[in-house]
Amino acid sequence: MVLPVTLITAIKQRASSRGQSVTAYITALVQQDLSTAEDGLWDQGGAGLVERLQRLEQRVTTLERRHSPTHLQQM
Image (cartoon, rainbow, N blue to C red; front, side, top):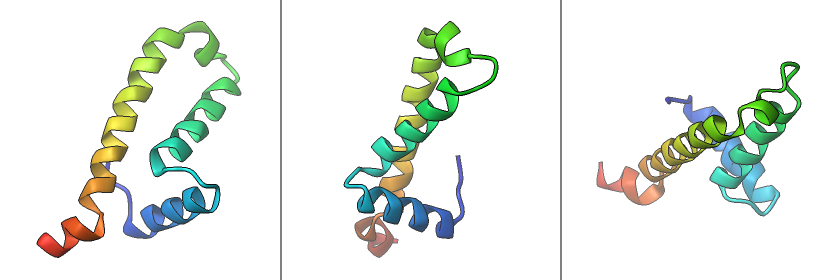
């Protein structure tokens, strides 16, 4: 997953203002979206969605590391 730098910055700011990590913030958003989806996928297929959500969390963590100040200084 690739996100524009401006969006990543906004996500980090919002997560920080809520006292959350970026992963926790995005996880909460995805869970909220899935739980309110019209077709109820979160409730009906929770196991498969949990796995997909975990993979998404791993990707977000990777992106966070790539865009950390330490990583950018090494580039």
